[in-house]
Amino acid sequence: MAENEVSGVEIELENVTKRYPGTREPAVDDFSMVVPAGKIVVFVGPSGCGKTTTMRMINRLIEPTSGKITIGGEDALSIDADDLRRRVGYAIQQAGLFPHFTVSQNIAVVPGLLGWDKKRINDRVEEMMDLVGLDPADFRDRFPRQLSGGQQQRVGVARALAADPPVLLMDEPFGAVDPITRGNLQDELLRLQTELKKTIVFVTHDFDEAVKLGDKIAVLGDKSTILQYDTPESILANPADDTVAGFVGAGASLKQLTLLRVRDVELQQEALTAEIGESPADVREKLVQRNKHFVLVLDQRRRPVRWVHLRQLSTASSLATAGKPLRDIVTLQSTLQDALEAMLAEGGAVPVTGARGEYAGTIELDTVIATIQKLREDHNGDVAE
Image 1 (tube, one colour):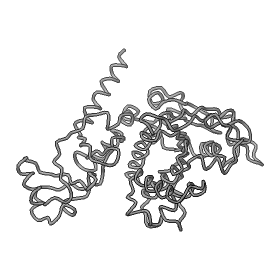
Image 2 (image 1 turned 90 degrees about the vertical axis):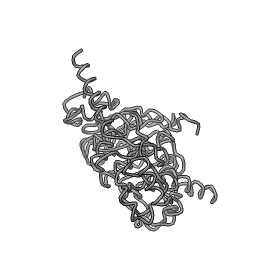
Image 3 (image 1 turned 45 degrees about the horizontal axis):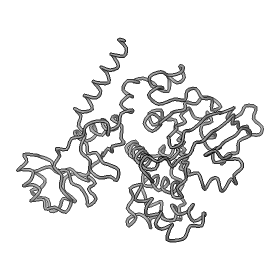
Image 4 (image 1 turned 180 degrees about the vertical axis):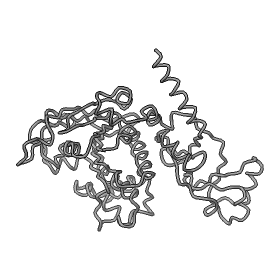
């Protein structure tokens, strides 16, 4: 796909209502919205408000009672339901992988249903695994039970994207993993979106996640009533009512850090790096010559893997086991909030990675503090005016 080319399509919901038999009130009542092509729109609201029901009506996992849904200008209700679901990627919480299929077989499901030939499927599986950061040689023949929660979610996203659908629906896909893994998966989604530019509808009950991921956020109330549909910046600055303000919560000014990305600030390039196969003795000599105390070890694909202190190199037999493995890495897509949390966990500067996980520089606490101070000055200036 050419740079900046949008592969997603516009979705429009017009007066969509869902009533379940035997209930007086509709689950979703007269819902209308345009989801722009190539953007991430996040539905956020309390449990039971109808946000998942609304999203599932887009691919007709739930059939609407009335109203109209168009995808790329085509009436979704006129398309065979199975065919529609093959055109719309779908990723859910806890990945929903087939337990007796390998990773490659899970990713190949929809291309197989579409009748792709074996070579095209195999090529696509490898491409998708590489795209979500899973080495095919290590992971393609594993079963879901042999994966961590974060790895399962990556496979789930790869499966949802395997047939290159223009639309991706994501139903709280990162809700069941730990906070660090969740942050990494959010970064991964943003990285993928800069490359793929799909139309993504994402459901969450976590407003911070909505602010981080959404080009636009729809704050939904009971029966999927749209309380506010706007950019994260506008919702943080001007909540439409008290209910939306409750979602924004305290510390709205600090939440501005979730609007700024690591790519928006200057990275440091002063850390000494070494490739994992280098001799510890040679690396120690480099540190002494440069008057530095730490080296950042990169793997064969220039991905950061370990910090090693000068004194640890005297007895180390290999850089692969020396020092300590990195616990927290941030990407160019990470928010400054993520970066700040990672620095507090690591106790100092944190490595930053690029589009394929390669080392891009480090981000330091002074940089984030200076950005917070500037935000505060700008905010005070706006108030004074």
